[in-house]
Image (cartoon, rainbow, N blue to C red; front, side, top):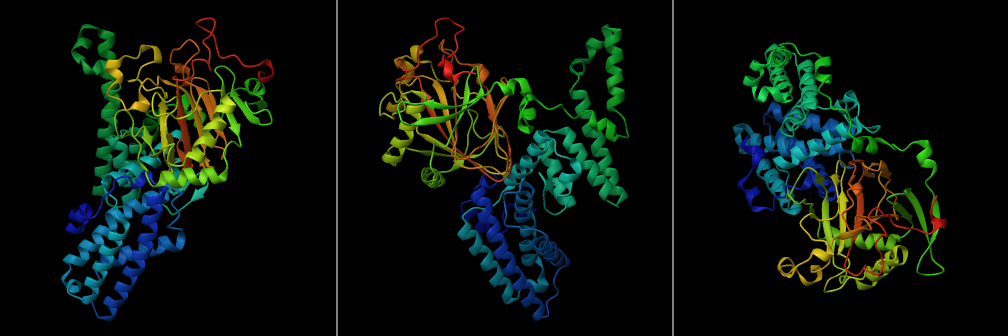
Amino acid sequence: MGAKYGVFVFLLLIHVNCEIYTSIQKLTALAEMESKLFVDFENFLRQSEAQGAVIPESMTRFYHERKNDTLLDNCSNMANPIRAFYLIHRVYNDWGDVLNTISSNQTIATQPSVADFRALYRLAMTKLRFWPVRNDVDGSADNILRLWSTYGFDTTDILNGKIASISTRRMKSVEIEALSNTAGLIPLPYYQLILLCELSNRTHDETERDRYRRKISKIYYWTITKKIPILRAPTLAYTDIPKLSQHNKVLRKASKTTISQEDINELLEPPSVFEKLCRGPLKTKKEESLMRCFLRETAVPFYLAKEEVVNIEPRVSLFHDVISDHDITYLKREATKKLSQSLTSDGVNRIRVSQTGWIRDSAHPRISRRLSKRIANIVNLDTTYRNRASPVEEWQVLSYTTGGHYGEHIDPVHTEELLWEMTEKKQKHLPLPNRYQGQRIATWMFYLSDVDSGGATVFPKLKVRVPVVKRAAAFWYNISPNGEIDHRMVHGGCPVIIGSKWVCNKWIRQSGQVLKRLCGQTYESEDLYPEKYMP
């Protein structure tokens, strides 16, 4: 096991980054490095055989397995989540075992070719500047489990390395076990049990099979008993015969020695509205028939915005062709220099799996002014970044790799105040641009890429689904005209199935919008739009 935590002490001297599974750029770089390293390993084996060395069976097996992977699949294409998991699992586990075997096996450890290969291995790590750790293995496995549960993919397809009609090789037992362990950590008992059953069916060792059966029974018991609140205080049941009967019935069910597929299927939770929307639209044909597309007038008389209304009340719009490829390239290039793992209010959390990069408006004033002015012209809000009480935040660029997502949330920050509630005591510790900004009144989100599959933005309470459309932008208000946070605007980003997704947020604050967006005449008032822009 020591090899898996760093083959050499040298690993401690390089920059170890546990965010590889969230970055398509790092995954691709790791895949390219590993392919070159395998060529070096192949040359090392050839030289060792020429010198009459006896190659350990474990190294020969690894060589043939990795060679078959190369013949069957494009190992460097990281747009597939299962392939990305294979890569991280292999580099973290198998390559560590190879180096450990080379160092400990006396038949080859003293050969000159060993020192050469170890030097090439160290050089590869030095150039890469990051290396997979345990968190990356669990994270890439979690990405597969998230896609599996969110989109309801077929179990057989997943185990055979197929996802969204894209195939790779069949999963090995050791990879299924890693997936099962991650499912137990989350926990996702249904998926953990399904994977353990597959492992039990694959093995021909009766002792190993019995071990899996005992583990399945233990997890099943824990899952069933945990779901019944009455078991947390079983003494209460003895004062009530019906409750006692229910208590005993549950215990009998949980204590079954043979767990069938039907028993496991009962643990599968029905999909949430969020998950249903990720799988496809939920609006009825009648509701969809009310949606419209308009050429909407803007502050510039000769510029008409292409607005697609995806929800009427509260209004959610998708504006098409509002950013050029040149500006997209700039935003992605500048953000890539600053990307780091995305955070929530609780820090790093599996509810949000992506990379974030902030770009200052002053970094490229001409492009920032152009994009900000375009937003202002379309939605009639102040979007000019200022050094004091700025009505907008800086540009936030997000990169989602395969499996990346953002769970259900609202954009207003719960620790921040509404404009009219602000006090000097709470504002004085903030940077000048962030003082007296108020809440995030609205969200403008550019789509900087297309996505091969998945990645839609969904609003569960509205049953709204916004697809990813490159060069388009989604817009909605987070604050009602009455000044309160609109909790109907809970939304999330569905997991990316194949490919990668790039978006850029421009959050518009309350400061500067007093005469731009007027209050409603009543507490229940909604935003008013000209009749010609209503269904």
